[in-house]
Length: 315
Image (tube, rainbow, N blue to C red; front, top):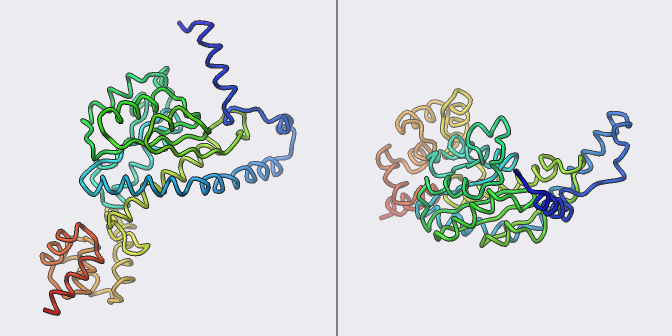
């Protein structure tokens, strides 16, 4: 049972967080017309991108550090509780279909496990030990990155994850929405996107959640760009797992090469549907196995593979 003194200490901590601050000017918001409430919320949301922009230099430095380790085979691991944990799991789960990554390369951990995605797991966010147990199962290495995500920046699960990972030599990142957070202090890279008090007091699934989603989008997407998972702004490593993605694959190959539909279909058939390989077949005039070899030798970077093919052809 939690002691009264503990409750007082926690209350004092929350009182100091901008994400928990009360907005007296919104005290009568429930009496306003629906369209006015919607405009107020939209105005609040519009401020989030600016708060993220202030952290871009820190975010960029973080991405370079993450990409360097992932290029050596490391993993990107998100760890959070509640909304923050769900956002991490969401970002991780979208990497395989978007960038054709192994599901084990980008991992989302949420306090309480999969059940916590759809329901509250009592006490899970308060357990540093649970975070340590979840990460121990991954057998972290120095090439891995662990990103603790917490709006308050004090959630024990997120802080515990970062502390455990740092002690084992992994790169650590703390993403919070309050300045001077324990989470950012515990990590090598602290990203603090201060969005201010929420529209509904303490409801950090709102502006704080939006800010976290934007930053996680940047971390994963730009890291994948650095790893050669795109060609320009095209998703050339897309995994064609359904009809829509198969159509997108054909469109991407056509956009890059200018080839007609029959040629695109033939190149994709010759490369088992791999977009980068098909582009190489068409632009470099090589067969499927040669395209695969060139990409393997270029660590999956299409531009480098095309350059290597051109050098070979010139010799």
